[in-house]
Length: 399
Image (cartoon, rainbow, N blue to C red; front, side, top):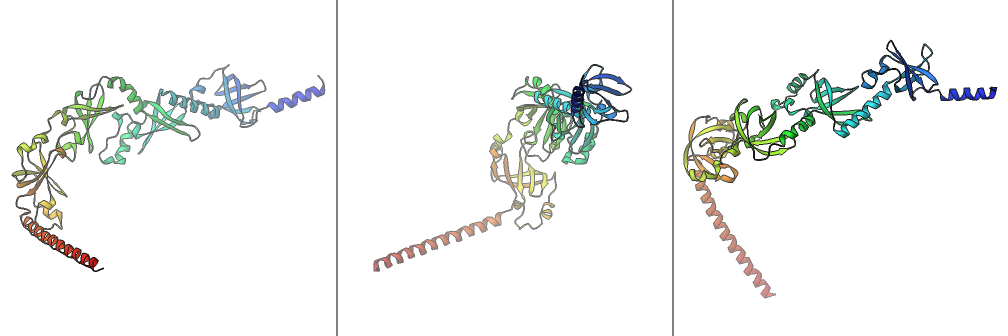
């Protein structure tokens, strides 16, 4: 071999030696004492060791001699004269690509809950850590905290730390390092076949599992749970479901809507609407002795019977102008009966207006007087208008 050929070969050799930051491919030639040696294209031998082994990823946790691998050059030459390589960069990219594929296909995977904050849970899957918002929890794990107290929500979420759950990847963005998981979507998929056996209009039997300010949750069937909105519990108005229900109550309800995993129920629709016949029992002007059911800042909720409740507005509880509502409402007690007059009945709106007996009589007389004055004013106004018309015609004639 001529000196010229040798020089060219030497030049090509050094030109092909990978540089720091290069991604290279090679074959594992030995694994010894936690160090993996890789033959890089027959040019040079590199070593992967310590945290650069990226053993937290399944691709690199069980590598063996003969495997083809990708690695990144992190040092030209270490203390032993070997090129230092890392599986971490290449492995990290591979894991992100895999997560993106899971998201695209909607695959179910396992992830371990490693931390909690007020917004949700931190999960680890493979070598990546992602986030699962509270809204993406399985409905059975959702923190139903009265008033949305964030500290109590966090306390509830911390109970899941250390557990492994089934999730779907709903966002996998390597550039923004954004990885979002959903447990709810897994639950929805698992429940789909069960839900297919139900239809709107079906009547189910279940148990009250939770009460919130907006409604009651009912468990029924095979681990199914539906929501009875507060407006669908009873025909009369209530401020909170606990007024008529308690956790553990056995009830019947009707399915009124099915929306993916969301099941909406109604209890009141299994009972005839008492408001349809309210005018058969009650009439405007009727005086009744009825019980104050609740005292609100705007007036009294009055219980005419078990099904029909009415409102006596604060303005209908006294003939005097009210400057301090607390003083006026303080004259009434819950559970005590008073005489009220029915002043309006609106069956379609489920409304019945009341006033305290005797209130408004003086005002009625005042209103009559006001009406008479207004009538006289209208007559005078018409006379004035007629006079002006006559004057204008006279002026036009003169012209």
